[in-house]
Image (cartoon, rainbow, N blue to C red; front, side):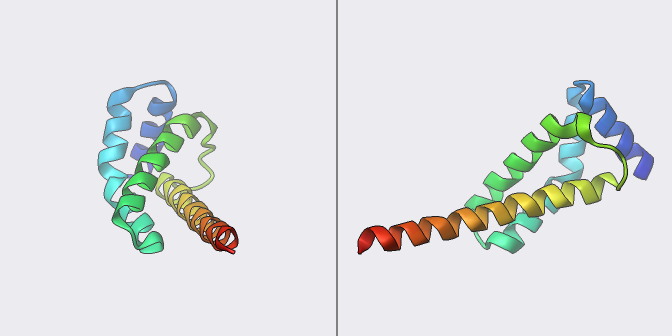
Length: 100
């Protein structure tokens, strides 16, 4: 499985849309569930899932293979989720200040 994922990422980096689809099908539920566990919001988790796969598509050439593909994808999902939480917090803070 480890080698299969690495091959898929290499193929995605070369522009292979079928490999990207396979990668998406294999990891979409894990990415969504990770985002949902952080955000506790279905719509935001769906949006983050899309963002993660856009990031995977754009960053596939940068993947060095120092970790497993699943670990790399998990980190992207966690980082995007944490970014969303920070954005949400800033928005609340700004709304509070604006209401004063």
